[in-house]
Picture 1 (cartoon, helix red, strand yellow):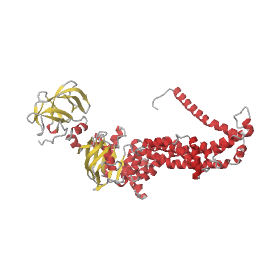
Picture 2 (spheres, each protein chain N blue to C red):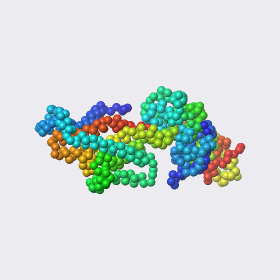
Picture 3 (cartoon, one colour):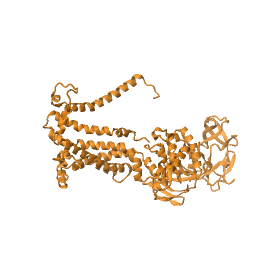
Picture 4 (cartoon, rainbow over the protein chains, first blue to last red):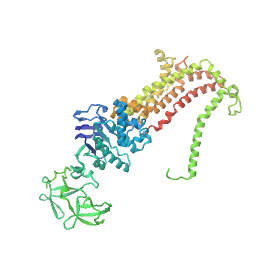
Length: 352
Length: 276
């Protein structure tokens, strides 16, 4: 086990810059997700750590030693691939044992490690079978067991659950968390699925266009997005962004005045989570025109507009708002994120 | 099948399938059967009319007599040797080329692929004279090795391009997984890629074998005494009685059939190769 330091990694494919100076530190035993839409560079970064791709410039260190230039096999890591990459010509046992056999481990240790990993992933009944007799979920378990069996310093996972169906994905997600917590391995996990990242990670690095937009705990990222992109990417519904005018350092939200950040100009973007509001009388609240009201059972989802800008708001299921209504909203001041309209970056959180 | 199709549809589909299989089998087997009949029927069997199509009065004697003809066995062995050289060289040279084409991007990859095929663009008839001259100079003229080399040239483009497709069919992730879990590139190739590509490589070998076995022109031009079977039969059979010709034909067909039958497991397996 070891920490990983990613130091100003750049990667270009011809004229295309896949990674623009990415720096990131992942602590020993930590589970960090690289989250972002496809093409954001997250898989490229993972493959650079693995040595399957060479960086244009920059350094990667594991446990204080640079691993750039080392062969993949000498980096002391294990990887779980998106489409499992389980060897079809070997039994499940031999698949899980593969890494140990390459390390020339003696049979006793191989057996012990394989049985341990197989036990964790519940694949003991299939050890004698060939992968083509297994379902996708079982193959993925084999792939994870193969990775854990070598007790790697660092475990890399490249969208390991994306090929599974929704139900199985949920089940495997919970199980992965249990297994990896027990193993305590430093893990880098690439995904485009925010619920996976939120549920599994100690910290999430949100990537976009070859840069890390923000790194932080799931709660931090959800509540205090550093950029407009992060707020819009994380959460369902995504964060609402309303452009509002600033006068005398104040922003009017219905009848209320809220202090805007000190550095704000004439206009500022008010970032607001859909559930960080409550219903208020029209006279004092911020006016919202409801276009569609969708009762979801657990909550009520309203789609409409504030100041002619599209918003989505979540209210308790008990509220009775109908499509076409106009309602007043009271914002939760502590949960507002102010963003600059020019740069799209968040202003530092106000202390009050 | 969750949807229930009308029974008539299914049975007509099955009928179509089996009649197709029967037609294809007949397409291959009937000529072989007739050739065998001619070879084993002796003089009477060949000239008998109308043909019964039944194996009447056959014996192995005419065929054995044919085998005893001077030069037959030697040319048969020559053919086997030439085909062996062709198979070995075209796999040893073609498979690495195919692997490189499948896995690496290099400058001039497309032109290389085209160039490989271009070796087939020159008709052997044009090359025959210069080849003969150079072979005489090199001491390769009238040798089995020389014929094997020429057949390798004929088979190599196919070997390179077919193995390229085979290696493309082995997912790159499997190779990368092997690297991650402790293999060098070469170890990964032999532990993971080669076993999965084996059926396809065997199929390529069969192909190279058949190309060499069937080739007549180069073998005829480049040899005088050490003829391959095809070249030998071409010169001898035109002056032979009919049942000799059939015996020669059968002898040309049989090794291919036996060889393909021996490696059929790999040929069938080639369709299962893309399993993850």
